[in-house]
Length: 258
Ligand SMILES: C[S@@+](CC[C@H](N)C(=O)[O-])C[C@H]1O[C@@H](n2cnc3c(N)ncnc32)[C@H](O)[C@@H]1O
Image 1 (cartoon, rainbow, N blue to C red):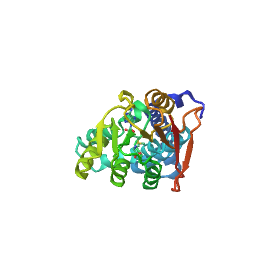
Image 2: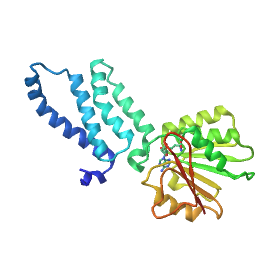
Image 3: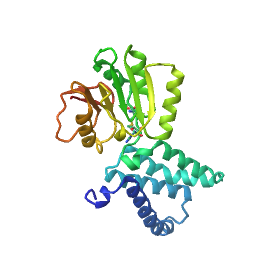
Image 4: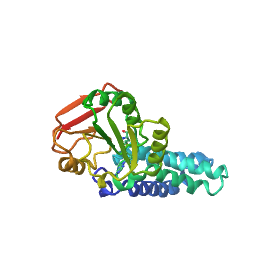
């Protein structure tokens, strides 16, 4: 299964394909199952079965927990929505919200998940104490990591770059409400941002962009700057330092000195 060429297709194609195949197989099997049981199976439970089987197969394809959860939840939720007779606009609006949040899943293969507080604290300990230091979070999500660092430091600047519209908007609004002058968020694709103004760049992305991003960092960061990746390695590039964070997911901060 893991060698199927489907594994190398964009995740959206893979998950839709899995749902389609599971639906077709169950559609053929349920009449026999109902005959054997001597009663009909409620549609809701059929959708739960569809979600669980599709989720299980998605695990075999090595997709992330975001996709696996979506696979399990989508069929019963869709069913529930129909049963509750929700107005028609609810489905496109829900889909639009999902797209605005998970904007980078399809194009960049990077979902939204957040740096936890223990890791943010480890990042703070790692920061050079230099006045005027400029720190960038490449793909800043909801901006929580930067808000924490901006609160805990003096005389240093923190910038978040985020291209997913909804997370950017939320981080920008909360950032403005926090009133911190040393904190800013920009709606920007990290590939179009020159990194040479930053002394430290931090990213928590996925394995997919790491080789390209490291190349970009090598070209653009000033000597002595730090490139820090939460969890994801750069192929064939041994980090100068690895911080093992004492959190539940055993986070590793990989640090390269440029
Ligand atoms: C795993 S989240 C990390 C969020 C935040 N850095 C944190 O640690 O809490 C990755 C974020 O990177 C964003 N992202 C992915 N590719 C991007 C790109 N090319 N330009 C800007 N943001 C990107 C995603 O939208 C997502 O919000």
